[in-house]
Image 1 (cartoon, rainbow, N blue to C red):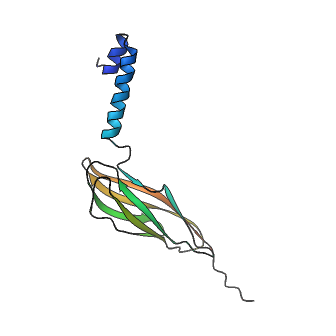
Image 2 (cartoon, rainbow, N blue to C red):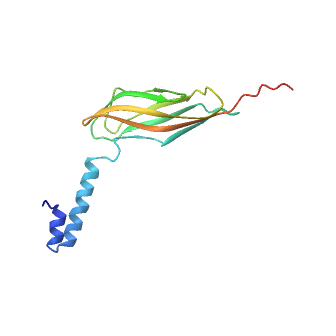
Image 3 (cartoon, rainbow, N blue to C red):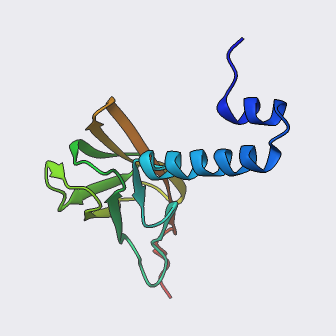
Length: 143
């Protein structure tokens, strides 16, 4: 049976030392391995094509890694388009901007995703956020 250092200390009755060791290990782990390799400035984007259309939005992509990531592709699903200022290699703690455009094809609610394929030391990964667009029908009535 393999015991963690903290478990061994607890078995020896050294509870305070075990708690300190566990806290230090968790802190070191958080410093070495960020929770999210990359992050977006928001968790979702919403668009409205109503009377005051809001069809373009910008979002910031940040590399949380201590090393650069290689951006393979930025793309969308659904009636959305994306363009970006991201370099192929995004440095450690660096950010870039992605512009997402809602292109409704019919009235109603549309959903999709913004996807970023990237490579880091552990291989290729994918991150995404949800996109929601509301398209209001255009009135063609004559008075």
